[in-house]
Image 1 (cartoon, rainbow, N blue to C red):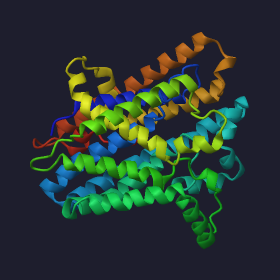
Image 2: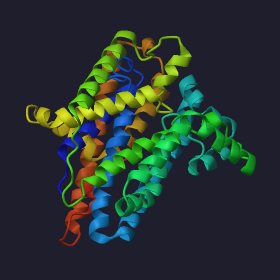
Image 3: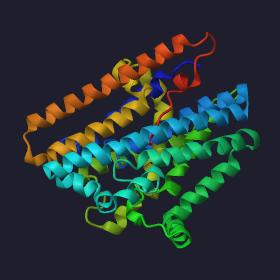
Length: 389
């Protein structure tokens, strides 16, 4: 199976947007959610799930469900190792720098760890305590662990029941399913980690995005895959929704209803709220319908493809870079000159590209040392976190 360069480029674009958004520079706000009320995280998770469904679905068809399950678990272990390393980097290097420099941004980021270091460390390694910025990979790991059963059921019995259950969980999540599960866990185990320290992303909401991408990717492994074709009215409606949200976002700002907190919840990112999901689905329809034609008229962007192909390493490196910048410069870009913003952005992307280049080179060397045969699936897949993770 050859690489899908356009998917690598899209994931590379999502990584660029995430990095620019997370870096505390003057570019963070204007480039946040540039396509409407949808962030790069949604696109990255959907693309990663699509590629996972496509690659591991093909593996299940060729080698069997057991081989697919083992491959998923190996990937989950690799992602977990990356998360654990990043978490330890935060609790050691970044914590030491933040305390020595007395940087409020870092102390706020790890306030629970500073108050309860041992509990935070153990809970973090158990994917319970999730500091800001480090809450995407734990969600991704949980999705990877559940995916073998979901994919096996979808391939054997069809996807209708899978999608129905996933949609039902998303609906329940809008009415507090995640908080109910947390309260039940506290009552049963005496869990000491506060709810707001268990991660901003609502797992029961975001699983719908992962399952949707998994189904779409797995459907491409059929002997004669049915193209994704939408009725004209659906395409027209999707274009309308996408354009309205795009104009709305840049005319009003990232808070669609300004100070009206109740209405803003309809676009809430963390629970993947209804209007946000609608905007995302509209953008997905527009991309599927018009993307192939656009690709024929635009040149390929090798830099983005390289970032997307090494997505896991690049994602982790983007966290390292952002945490270091927060430790040294703080979270308010207004307190330092614009030229420093430019330097931070250039240096950050130089680091990301260096990591991507090194990762892909090591992958090629590793593949060359193995006996001849089919390309290693982990390399072909290019699957990584959406991200998140």
